[in-house]
Image (cartoon, rainbow, N blue to C red; front, side):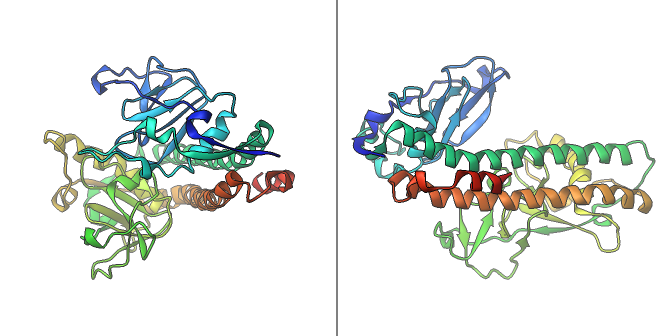
Length: 367
């Protein structure tokens, strides 16, 4: 195993992405990548795969990989030219680059590809590259598998909900007949930190990633703790309820937590399903404004179907184990991601010799 000092530009040729206004997009088979990841699909591809994508403007430092043809947007840098190196190894190598050191000092900071091409990197021979990407890929593949499984479990939960309640005549009540609504606190942004001091802070943008970007140790008097498997919804722009799949965290303002109402027989899985059409109703009449907002009054004005206790019990018997499995899979994903992130710099620097890792044992553990 031999390692060679080079510049990043000798390993991969990063280029600026392509313009594609939202009005010109047509849903299709090809993923569209911005600086923050996949943001939809398009009927045409701008480049063939494999392709690596990272941020040029906007979100800086995240790296994405596509095996297939795709469309990297102009807020990103991309490459399909790996100069004879293992493409997946290059993907992991880019995750170790100190991107913020290469931000331009302009009104809108961005990455200058010519500058970052000069970044010094140390790379091994191709065989070692493939071995390293194989080890890290095992962890990522298991994370992807768990994520897909969670999607299937949510679909199964929805099918069961439709089967259990869609044809029943239900009495109507208020939101408080099925849920206690708890609102996030107005934490001081000046006390936010990225050093993971205190508790993770759930903002609206974190509801889609389950990965808060900021922490706070502010002991706010209205601080609310959220646990894996709780039901949350944002109150600005989009109100779709979600099952929180991140770690225990605190709730920021403009995000609300729905808990089963006492003595209602309602479960969190029922709330997740029942809230979808209810919040969609609010979304529809609130979307006339520039940015839709949901308030306490909107929730209190809802006519909420109240299910029979027997129907609830039968639904909960099937749906709650599904919710609990989703939580277990998500917890495993966080542990796998932590292991991958710990291994990544050590493997990429040669501190850990990949040839000494027991791949059979690792693969067996992930099965």
